[in-house]
Every structure is written in C-alpha cells, then in structure tokens.
Image (tube, rainbow over all chains, first blue to last red; front, side):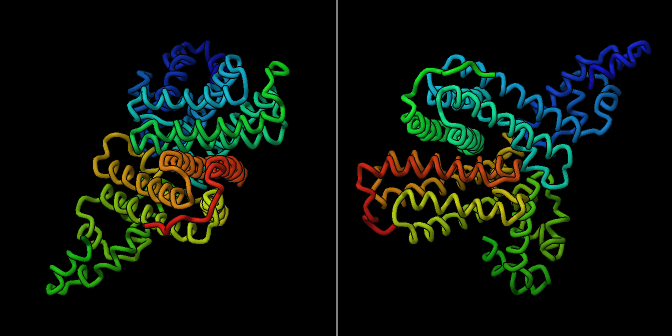
Length: 220
Length: 220
C-alpha cells in the first residue's frame, strides 16, 4: 500500500514522496524497536520520527491513521520476520524437537543480547491496548495465527499428525512468549531453558510414534 | 506500611486518614484492574481515583511516589494472591501433574470469564516499562520469583527432585504467561489447552521416577 501511494504521487516530486518507501520502512523499524523496549503507549510519534530520521510530514503521509496504524503494520512486519526465521530454522533442523530447540534458543539469544531490554513486538500491543483496538487487535491476531500455522506446517513436515502439530505449535509460541516476559523480569535465561526442556520432551513424545523421521516433504 | 501510616496520623482525624486502609486497598485494586486490562502506561491516576471512589488527596498521601509506586504494590498484591491460589490448588491436587492442570485451568477460566479482556497484572509492567523502572522492575522480579518458588515447593512435596521442580515451575509460569497473551490475541482458549497438555505430560514424565506418589509432606 505504501509503495503504491508512492507511485501515485511520484510525479509531484515533493520531499515526502522522495523519502517514500525508505522513510516508511525506517519509521516502522523505529516503532518496532520502541514497542519491543517499552510497549505501545510509551511510543510517541515524535520519538518514531526522531529515531527514524524521517521528516515529520512523512509520518502523517504514510500513516494517516496515526499510532494504531503504525503499530498494526509493525505487528505484521514482526510476524513476517518470524515466518522467515521459522523456515530457516526448519531447514537446519533434523526433527520437530530440533526445530523447537532452535526456535526457543533464537528468542533466548535475542533476549540476552538485548540485555533483557527488548521482547516481542506483538505482546505489548495485546496487553497494552485491550478491546478498543479495531485493526490493531486484528493485526495481533493475524500475526500470532501466522506464526502458529508456520510452526505447525513444519511439524507436519517432520511427521507429526496435523492436530498434534497445531497443539504443539500453540504450546511453543505461548512458551516462548511467556519466557520473553518472565526471563526479562528475572534477568535470567532460566525460563527459556525450562521451556525448551519441556517442549523438546513433548516434541519427542509426539514424534515417537512417527520414529522421529527426517522431513517427509519440503515446507510450502 | 500503609496501615502503619494510618496509625501514626490517626489522631489528626482528617478525611484522608479516615479513609486510610480501605481507600488504599481500593486504589490498588483499581490500579490492578486497569493494568490487567490496558497495561501500565494507559493507567492514569485520575482513573485510579475515579474507579476506587477514593478522595484524590488520599492517592498522594498513600502513594507519594505516584504511579510507579502504586504499580509496584499492585505487582506484590497480584503475586500474593497467586501464592494463595497455588496453595489452595495444591491442597486439592493429587499429583504434580494435577497441580499443573489446576493452575493452567484457573488462568484459562479467568481469561474466558473476562471476555479475553484481562491478563496478568505483572506482565504489562515488564513489557511496558523497560529498564528505567527501579523499584517497579524489582517488584516484578520479586513477584515472579515468589510464584516460581511457590509452585516448585509444591512439586517437591509431590515427590519431584528440587532441580526438576524448579525447572518445571519456570516452564509452568512461562507457559501460562504466554497463553495469557496469545489466547487473548486469538480470543480462543486453544493456547491454554496446548500449554496444559504439554506441561501435564512433562509433569508426568518427571513424576514417573517417583511413582507419582501422594504428597510426602505438607507445604510450608
């Protein structure tokens, strides 16, 4: 949508448009950083403009609905990045249990690398906005649905049945989301280690019936 | 601390003091509700005063450090209530797995009863405040530590080894915290069901070596 707007207005040649897609992406990146650090309500549009070094005018140009719109797009970008990571980790994994380990460890390393200062970009939108959120609530729902589906698809490719795969994928997403919060509060990787250990055991149990065989088919 | 302040000033007989402990508790209760619904930053002190029907003056009297102080005390109250619930659930449970089931189901029922509108009172303080939080960060750390310890103590009483008990307790807290977020976003109990199923399996595995025996000793 952003790209299209730029094409439509490109002939006007004003500064806002020339800084179009880049400024737009930088603003979403800045919003995402702030949300991961301090949540939705603590994000001021001035800080988004400042961090992204974008002209203030381009904020209203790209996000006419303001803060909720930029946050909703941030949730989509965050989920999209997760999908890519899940695909990459699944390509490196030798079993469902191995994918679980990789996915938990990725979040664990990110938390430690941020000095326990940065969590998921979607969770604060869920806890910090509540009911009155329209498109933002829908963006969170969609983001989490996509992540669960992406993990489940890989579990199926590793030989799990569809129901078991979806259930385990929900447990993996919830486990990592929760560890992001308790690990951050405790400033310790212990919750990630505990979640990994529990979920790897479950993945092995589910795979036991299938012989924990190598992937049956490439992911879609 | 609040009660002590009231004793010290009781002779002054002003309205603030007469409404002392009750108004204080009502204000913490109101703050807790708002934080569970919309997080820390969305909580205005005016709304706390309004919801608690407390005189505005008593807010500054009981919470001279303002918003961070009331939120920190809210985290303590929330954790304290959890400790009571864990003790109660453990008293009704017949095994570690049974306690896991009860603890997850309690959170699941609360989420459904709130129409997916109310989560944990501590999580939004962790994701919504970040580093600059001093006493508030410490209150969150302490709250989660107490909950993990309380669950682990019960697991030990049900026969698990100390290390396994602490690890499983971390996984249970993280699993429930994560399900509170993804279930709320998805407006579905599925994440709670998945987390319960995974953690009950783990509790059974851990208990297998101990014969899943009845509690060895009453909890402290």
